[in-house]
Image 1 (spheres, rainbow, N blue to C red):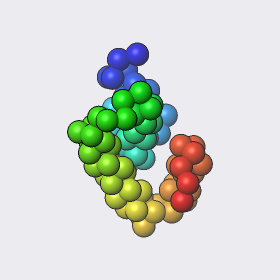
Image 2 (image 1 turned 180 degrees about the vertical axis):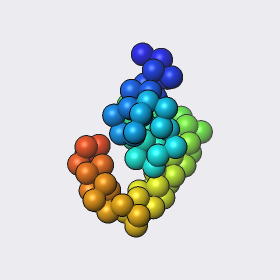
Image 3 (image 1 turned 45 degrees about the vertical axis):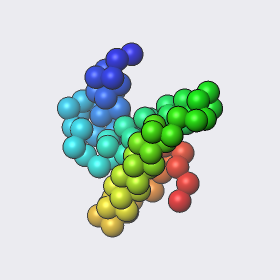
Image 4 (image 1 turned 120 degrees about the horizontal axis):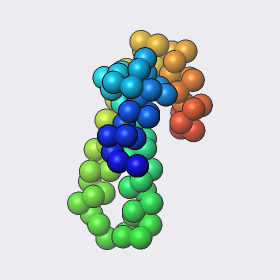
Length: 88
Protein backbone atom coordinates (compact mmCIF):
# COMPACT_ATOMS: atom_id res chain seq x y z
CA UNK A 1 0.00 0.00 0.00
CA UNK A 2 1.42 3.38 -0.95
CA UNK A 3 1.91 6.24 1.45
CA UNK A 4 -0.96 8.21 -0.05
CA UNK A 5 -3.37 5.28 0.25
CA UNK A 6 -2.31 4.67 3.87
CA UNK A 7 -2.86 8.34 4.64
CA UNK A 8 -6.37 8.27 3.18
CA UNK A 9 -7.18 5.06 5.06
CA UNK A 10 -6.03 6.45 8.41
CA UNK A 11 -7.71 9.81 7.75
CA UNK A 12 -11.04 8.19 6.96
CA UNK A 13 -10.81 6.07 10.13
CA UNK A 14 -9.80 8.82 12.58
CA UNK A 15 -11.02 11.99 10.84
CA UNK A 16 -14.23 13.32 9.34
CA UNK A 17 -13.35 12.09 5.83
CA UNK A 18 -10.42 10.76 3.79
CA UNK A 19 -8.99 14.24 3.20
CA UNK A 20 -9.15 15.42 6.83
CA UNK A 21 -5.43 15.17 7.49
CA UNK A 22 -5.24 18.35 9.57
CA UNK A 23 -7.23 16.86 12.42
CA UNK A 24 -4.96 16.23 15.45
CA UNK A 25 -6.36 12.71 15.83
CA UNK A 26 -5.38 11.87 12.25
CA UNK A 27 -1.93 13.40 12.67
CA UNK A 28 -1.35 11.40 15.85
CA UNK A 29 -2.46 8.18 14.14
CA UNK A 30 -0.19 8.83 11.14
CA UNK A 31 2.78 9.59 13.38
CA UNK A 32 2.11 6.45 15.40
CA UNK A 33 2.13 4.38 12.22
CA UNK A 34 5.44 5.90 11.11
CA UNK A 35 6.96 5.48 14.59
CA UNK A 36 5.98 1.81 14.71
CA UNK A 37 7.59 1.29 11.31
CA UNK A 38 10.82 2.87 12.49
CA UNK A 39 10.89 0.76 15.63
CA UNK A 40 10.88 -2.32 13.40
CA UNK A 41 13.67 -0.76 11.32
CA UNK A 42 15.85 -0.25 14.40
CA UNK A 43 15.58 -3.93 15.30
CA UNK A 44 17.50 -4.63 12.06
CA UNK A 45 19.74 -1.53 11.99
CA UNK A 46 20.66 -0.51 15.56
CA UNK A 47 23.47 1.82 14.43
CA UNK A 48 21.27 4.05 12.26
CA UNK A 49 21.64 7.14 14.44
CA UNK A 50 20.37 9.70 11.93
CA UNK A 51 17.05 7.89 11.63
CA UNK A 52 16.91 7.62 15.41
CA UNK A 53 17.04 11.41 15.62
CA UNK A 54 14.08 11.60 13.24
CA UNK A 55 12.25 9.07 15.38
CA UNK A 56 12.81 11.16 18.50
CA UNK A 57 11.51 14.26 16.70
CA UNK A 58 8.37 12.37 15.65
CA UNK A 59 7.80 11.11 19.19
CA UNK A 60 8.11 14.68 20.51
CA UNK A 61 5.70 15.98 17.88
CA UNK A 62 3.19 13.26 18.72
CA UNK A 63 3.54 14.05 22.43
CA UNK A 64 2.77 17.74 21.79
CA UNK A 65 -0.25 16.83 19.66
CA UNK A 66 -1.50 14.47 22.38
CA UNK A 67 -1.22 17.16 25.05
CA UNK A 68 -3.11 19.58 22.79
CA UNK A 69 -5.85 17.00 22.25
CA UNK A 70 -5.99 16.22 25.99
CA UNK A 71 -6.65 19.89 26.78
CA UNK A 72 -9.20 20.52 24.01
CA UNK A 73 -11.06 17.19 23.72
CA UNK A 74 -10.41 14.94 26.73
CA UNK A 75 -13.01 12.34 25.70
CA UNK A 76 -11.51 11.97 22.21
CA UNK A 77 -8.04 11.81 23.79
CA UNK A 78 -8.97 8.76 25.89
CA UNK A 79 -10.64 7.05 22.92
CA UNK A 80 -7.61 7.66 20.72
CA UNK A 81 -5.21 6.22 23.31
CA UNK A 82 -7.28 3.04 23.45
CA UNK A 83 -7.56 2.73 19.66
CA UNK A 84 -3.83 3.22 19.08
CA UNK A 85 -2.75 1.18 22.12
CA UNK A 86 -0.73 4.06 23.54
CA UNK A 87 -0.08 4.21 27.25
CA UNK A 88 -0.51 7.35 29.27
